[in-house]
Image 1 (cartoon, rainbow, N blue to C red):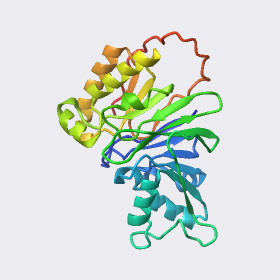
Image 2 (cartoon, one colour):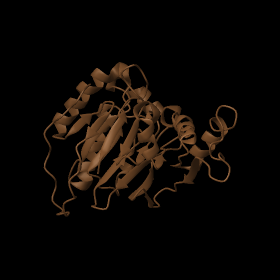
Image 3 (tube, rainbow, N blue to C red):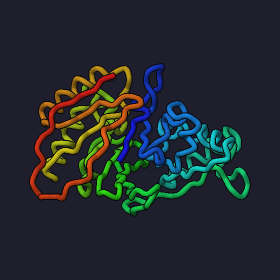
Length: 278
């Protein structure tokens, strides 16, 4: 499974881009940096976008990519909860802020919405996709994406306390999770439905107690102003857990997964610590 982190932050600057993932060149999760990271040719290869929730940094490129594909006579399908679709149609693709590309061109619209229902698997671009509700300040889901070889990636989207409850029935090889704030902002993180490094430590330790292993973990959605502090605290968490936790950066290619090994029921051994800070 080919996984590329297009954007890895919650705010855009000259060196950082909002969060968006690309799987196999055809499937994107969240739309924080699609048009700023992908050429027109790469945008035309996209077949579907999965949206986790309606906050602007996760849906911002839907109008822009719809315009680009409209001009190129290409099409794309957007999968989301009904709440996210309603927000986009009411406030972005509403015929005033941007054209209603879900209706244009007539008879063969550029953009098609499809509703994801929690816990109901869908086959999208050849992958099995399951939406899992997560705890955030608005209605939100994460997505588990599995390939035909049994490899699975789970992306949390934005989430905060109680993430471990959402992971009980999942066994991903890769966990892509947000860590927005450093530990000194723990009260703010709790109030806004986000994670800190210590919160992630708690989640991963709980996951290991449940499943016997810690998945390779990729951290995204960092606040750029706190990135150095977050990175140091993530390194401490990784060392304490003996886990492989990578702090992502824009345009980062995640090493491709090997075919999933048969489950033995034995706990996985801890990984060496690897931490990338751009």
